[in-house]
Image (tube, rainbow, N blue to C red; front, side):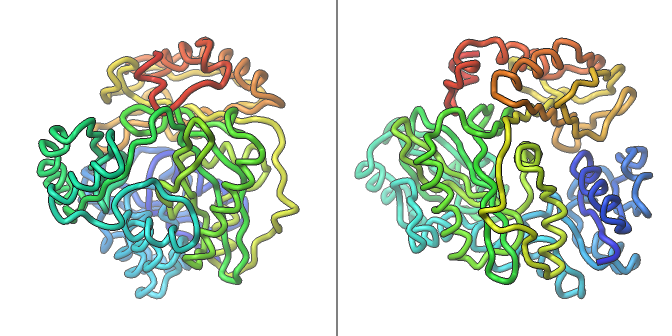
Length: 443
């Protein structure tokens, strides 16, 4: 490979640029009119404006992105995460244009993006799935019948859903019947597919995922787990590795299940198998993300592996640089997603950052694309930065994180830094005792 187009924006665009620079590759940035002054746009070898600020008119415009790629004669397109990263039609169009898509084949994206097909595929691979419907439920009557069999509470989910959209917890049959039609309508509006399915709620659960990567030669490895249980609105805000909860015995079972999943779909690229884990450490497949994850830096920090570099090598047809026995984990890492949002109500708070300063601390990596004077627009995800803190132990990591947030200054907009300061001094979090309901129940 010689030249890569990055079909994304913000911190992930800058992150991919860094690896391109490290490997001596040329890079092409694309940007919307709202992002024309972002620093990474100037950092790339060349850059193209692809449209107006709304994502539908720029970062989701497949034709414009491919047009820029053809004009620049790039070898490959890296989609980052979000936007078109798990869009099978885009991956197919990229390949048809004679350009390498840095990700799995389009049919695999389709298969794992359809939650019902993904459940069925995982069952074939002997990966445990949450008790629920075998496929899409035809109507509310079938939904009520299945819910009665598996027991309430249940989760009503959009078959093509993601990111918490199209999910509804139902405590009883009355709520299920009230919610069914509105969720179908929402799923149709967001995902173009109104199909719904049902899973049993795993209360008191933890959200733990396994990082995997596979090449086109049949080789696949895992890069250990990440505990992503601290969430708001079903979206992660703090992730850490290793999990302070799972036993080594369960981790090994989870790693083996994740690799069976990868082999079942003949996967190629970095990916993540997400599990919901019960209090007794029973674990069930939730979904597979067929792309780089937001939280990939904590895996990089404890393994010393550049995941973007491995993605590029795999996409170029190379074999994985290391085998499973060569991959080790050292120390502890936690990522905090710093958002422009109200720290109590979690509502977005876009605006202009007056001052953003932070201490230079050993063991702190800051992935961001903004600085003092930057605007956080209402058009995109309001994430300001990823604060990735590493230490020789969990206690050491927490102490470094407390120091960082105590000395960080961010003015001009509301942000969730104060929430992290509170969490980092909360007894149950310090002990590693938390579930996916932690923020709403404890903070």
